Length: 122
Ligand SMILES: [Zn+2]
Image (cartoon, rainbow, N blue to C red; front, side, top):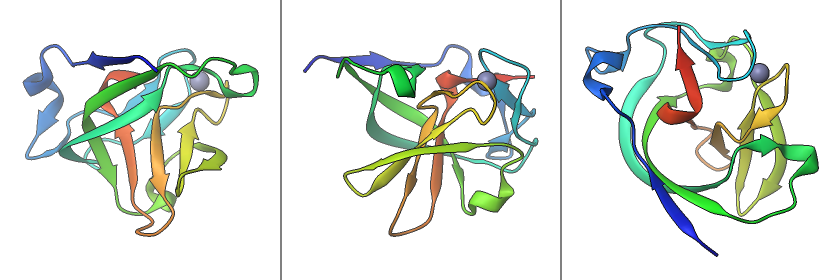
């Protein structure tokens, strides 16, 4: 299994008072995922499979990501989809075009984490 590290250029510009400065949308369609100021920036290492339409996912290449927006309650999302369960987490996807994973949902803590580099700041 390969692990590629993805980092976010110009991250400071995306954060205001520890939260997302602007609303987050899908990279692949106009679907709004999160309103501004709802997520909390956290630095955390987590390995996510490469972005794809999950239903057609065949490879197992993982990317190690470090920058996430934490969303404490799944009902705080504007739109989000959930994929299958794997290792105590559910992957988050775009609710409209199903691209993902854009992050993960922890089944124990109920917290959600959205990767900064997998969403667009609108
Ligand atoms: Zn989408």
